[in-house]
Each structure stands twice: as C-alpha cells, then as structure tokens.
Image 1: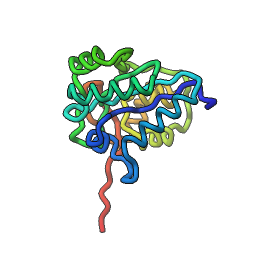
Image 2 (image 1 turned 30 degrees about the horizontal axis):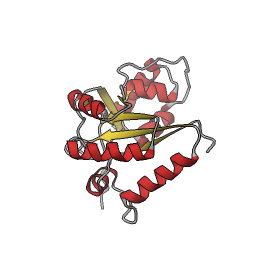
Image 3 (image 1 turned 120 degrees about the vertical axis):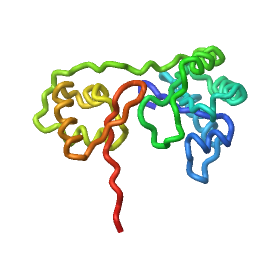
Length: 193
C-alpha cells in the first residue's frame, strides 16, 4: 500500500487467451486474478495503472478487446498502457503487434496510450571497473539492446559496447536483430547427458 504506483497486467479477459499469454499455474483462473486486481484497486489509494500486452492472433481481436475493455472498466484504472513485443520473446510464436493494430486498440479502449520504446539510450557517466557481472545479470533476466543495458546498469554506453563485444567474442552472449535494434542475450547452452 506504500508503493507510489502499481501497474497491473490485464492481458486477457477470456480464459483461453489468459492461459495462452500468461501461462498461469493450473490452480489459477482468470476470474481469481481479475477479482484480486479489483480488490487491490479498491484498497489502494495511489496511482494505479493497467498494462495490456498485445499478442497478435491471441488478444487483438475485436471480441477479446471488447472483453478486456469491459474488465478494465470494472476495475477502474486511471491509465491504461498498450504494450507489444520489442525484444526477442521467450516463445518464438509471439510476434510484435504492428502500429496500425495498436492504434486501433488505442481508439477502442478509453484512456489508453501506446508504450513508446526508446530507440536511443542515455549514456550515463558511471564507469564501473567490473560491470561484466551486472551485464550478465541483466541479460539473465531478459534480452536487451546496448542502450537498454546502459540505462539499466548506469554504465557508459561505450564501456557497455566494449564489454558486450568481448562477451560475444567469448561465446557467452549472442545477438538477434529486431525492429527496435540489435538485442543481446545469453547464449543458450545445451546440456549434454
């Protein structure tokens, strides 16, 4: 209750879409999650927002968006943000939503806005002597661009670039090109038995 802002994810309003996108524990169902978010919203007094992660072919249909809109209206969030994949996903079948789709959804969900992913990161002046572990730790959580890593770790962008080049050369990190840029991710190691 002391948090300044809470951002809850409401990616689906049908059980099928919920299971496909969020892959919840088998004991959870969508109504439990929505009831929990609604209860939290009633008690929470600070800024409460909702983020919707749009997955083409799953929750971007008119029917699913109408269900999501009705669910959000019942919860009563002040701000709604539409998000889409902008880095390599954990599942290959998940693709980014195109701008036209996001704009159409924005028009149909009152008070919603599209999250704009930054194409350029700020270069911070922090020159850590040993920031390799910070970069590895960051990439262990999710793939990131050079700029993302600089922003997250606070390390100067040129120093991050040099470290990433070494990590790629050593075979610890690999790259993948996406619409927003080149993403760095930990190389998947196969376990031999």
